[in-house]
Image 1 (cartoon, one colour):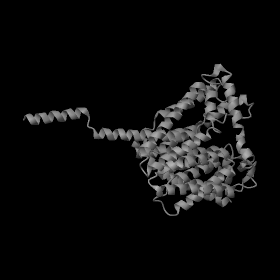
Image 2 (image 1 turned 30 degrees about the vertical axis):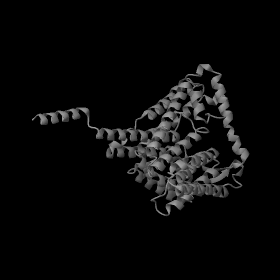
Image 3 (image 1 turned 135 degrees about the vertical axis):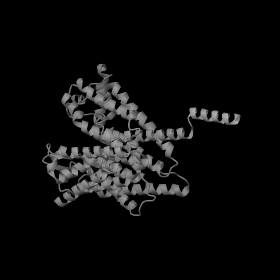
Image 4 (image 1 turned 30 degrees about the horizontal axis):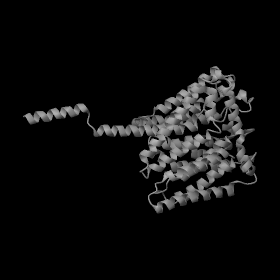
Length: 451
């Protein structure tokens, strides 16, 4: 097994070296970084200790920063529209979380939710969106994301430290230490979404069957890890977004789209058949799915606490204050909307709603602009589908104080739409000569006629 670990390390080093010159590939690696880190730690416990764990984080952060810097010197024009209203609002929301530490009743918990996660916020909010500048670049990242992520998950399952515990596939990286179970399941479901929503016209013949296997395996990892919310949200997103990813041109095309949905259903049934067994079946019973892990109770307690304290309606009860309500049983509400309202008040809640509104508007504009383009349309739908997926997941996990993988997709949609609008404006300006030039040309014509 140690040989597998060394092979994985070599592959990661080569991949990040390649990423320095290919920003879209660096984007792929950063999106899958948490599971990649977990695989390295399970094969090499040296990186699992509190003292050595930051080595991986710093290495990845420096690689991302170096990739952005290299791109800036090679393609400075690609950074246009990096600063947009959504980014500004996201930064404001982050600073509200830091400011709310001043009046929280649970300062240690608030500090753990904010400052300790600040490096990840910088990585995913400021650096990662800069790695994708155009829709075709995101299109180039699709197939690498599918196969790189699937390889990571396969190395993870092959680890001797992986076993079922409480109906979940858990990866132990040391004594009593385990990696993020839900992060592994979420990556698997993301693979399924990428497989289902991308088109394969023009790709090599083996790409589609290999991608179908990747989708089957990714969904299977979702079942293995017990990531119920991720699996249900991913399946819903595929069914909602799939018809929009392809244009219906005629009856034959309609039947092809229907066959594609049929293949997806087959993958889902096969995944249930092969990946739900004695070790994890209890987590996928109807009773377990219906319980929702007590999320409804958390929402109810949070809203009741908010409305019963008018003094905190405007600015909230403070970052991390939720733990006081639940007697430290839960350190955050597991719901972005509830957390923004309870801990950051109406101010934070309105900022969050404004972010969602601008992202939804940008997504709509992107889709309308490119719906007649058979190449860009599925890329746009995939991007919107992933954003919808992470939004749904934010209703049952994640904290607004450390948005990470959720906001990066929102920022990407906003940036790409802003870039499209900027390109359209520049094209219009190029077509219409400035007024002054027009008047000068008219004056020249008059002088010629007079002569």
